[in-house]
Amino acid sequence: MPSGTGGSVALVRSVKSTRLSLLDMSAMPTRRSQETTRSDIPPRPILLRRGRIPDAGVADVLVRAGKLAEIGTDLAAPPGADIVELGGKLILPGLVDAHCHLDKTLYGGPWVSHLAGDSLADRIRTERAKRLDLGLPNVDRITALLEAMVTAGTVYARSHIDIAPELGLTGVTAVREACARLGDRVTVELVAFPQYGILREPRTAELMDQALAEGVEVVGGIDPAGMDGDPVQHLEVVFGLAVRHGVSVDLHLHDEGSLGTWELELICDFTERYGLAGRVAVSHAYGLGEASPAEQDRLAERLAETGVSITTAAVYSFPVAPVRRLRAAGVNVACGHDGIRDLWGPFGTGDMLDRAMHLAYRSAFRRDEDVSLALEAATYGGAATLGLTAYGLRVGAPADLIVVSAENGAAAVITRPVRELVMKSGRLVARDGELM
Image 1 (cartoon, rainbow, N blue to C red):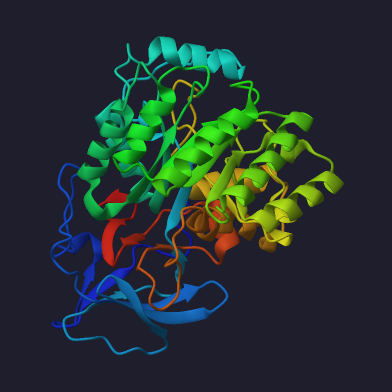
Image 2: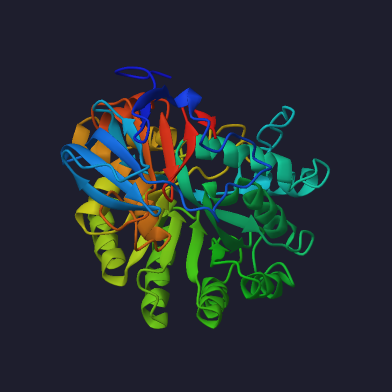
């Protein structure tokens, strides 16, 4: 990938005043997903010298105790701090994948040819028939994908985990094990997701209840009308579980046309009734993407009023939520990968800048300010969907950031340069596209 204006940023140890390449940072963690990072040892302060912050210009950033302690010009380095000379490279907040399916992935394993037909029913049927034969969920495959996501700058992710009678909670266990291998390099929030329906699949609701009782953070749902045939009862189960366990809601909504938009309004009604404003997301929302402009504006007003977020992955030729209209109305918009190299499709990289580029392209964004909306969905919009109240390039927030060679956020989305630095909670976890 293009690297823009130069090679690796350089590190200076303030105690010795000697310049080191990032490749020589022997004091930093050295590598392997099977070894967790040393979160029990406080990281040394790091001063990022002369980085470029969107809408703020060139500045120094002091990272101390895992947080952004100070942002300004000509900052003094604390004793023992590492100084990283950025030379005007762009600093962006760490990327957020607000919708992925880690438990399904084949990433890093032998090639598996795609066998499913094009319909939702075909993909579900093929997955149910093949996943156990392929050993899914597979902890090694999940680990490989998480490594790729971290090196590409993802610091937070929301993963939908299939819950079904034939699977039990195996997906939850597998993803948690893979996350443990990554240690504190990434934070993954899990969704109890009824991929094959709730009402049509006996025991699924009970398994979802168990998963939430065991610490899964979000309750999911899927096509209350198209999948389960009873949208009201489906949503009663989902929102009832959310209130019982004090968790958020994230619903897949593939249903198109007037059915999809009617369900979207119904979800807004449930959100209002259950008092969950700001804690409900609707993923995909294809009906919204294909509605008329006037209908989109009306629905956007209702979404903003009830505090319901929209998450889009801009996959294939499926309708894409109208990002510009939604943001103009005050609706939070997030972005995610959806499936990554699984039985639903062979595509996906784990790189959220790549996903943001797809969102911008599918939305016909060309101007910098529009392309930046796609980047916002992959950063601040995703953070809001995950309920991250402390996030971003501001003093006091966790030091979760990436450094790239790009003129601005729009350029980063279009060129997808290598992530020269990835920082999570004040620790360097990847550099130059390699896990540390």
